[in-house]
Image (spheres, protein in one colour):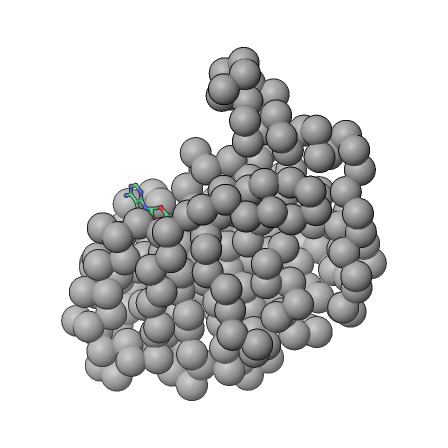
Amino acid sequence: MVSINETLDQALNLDAADSWSLGEKSFAEIVGLLKDLDPKRILEFGSGVSSVRFALRLPDCEITSVEHDRFYADKTESLKNTYHASNLKLIYSPLNSRWFGLTPYRTYSFKPEPIEFDGIIIDGPPGAVKGGREACLYFVYQHLKIGGFVFLDDYERSEEQRAIRHWLETYADSFEFFEIQGRHRVAVLRKMQHVKPKMMTAARIGHNFRCQFGKFIAGKKGCL
Ligand SMILES: C[S@@+](CC[C@H](N)C(=O)[O-])C[C@H]1O[C@@H](n2cnc3c(N)ncnc32)[C@H](O)[C@@H]1O
């Protein structure tokens, strides 16, 4: 592990990096919440500067970061090597179609080992992949420990707001919800108890289908 002043190092500064990054304020608040848990494992969807920063700031925690784009996976790998972030595990995982609750989603093919995570950070896939972030939680919910957090970046966007609404419906009474106001809005869910996912309503299944296949039927309208 190298000794650096992370925020002064431009390659690692989450505000200096392109606007796709989490931002320093959100990062600091997320780290503050996670540190209280003495975290052992964190899972991130959508890699980048943040992955290396989490690894350096939480040296006793294994950070698993899942990336669908080979170019960005290599870029993060190179940053990891430069800063000797040995507790960062990068997983290249292309997107494919996966089903949850009678609905297909385009999302990461990643399947976690049977282990528990203290926190799940959802900052990918990019916004153009409708429903991709929402689907992430459906495939890892059972791996989030009680007391652990889900962080969803870009909550100012209607797609992310929709994901939160759907998660709160699907996992009714499982989460406490609050928000972090940083460079972007970050929605935070804290898992209070494990619950069985609720069946989706027919309206929601119809909506999801329109969202996934809308471009073949009537352009991309009607997804949000
Ligand atoms: C919001 S970014 C993830 C950023 C990362 N969590 C961070 O805060 O540094 C989501 C995805 O967009 C892609 N990406 C990252 N930077 C990008 C850029 N400058 N332009 C286009 N796509 C980018 C990568 O595939 C990444 O997984």
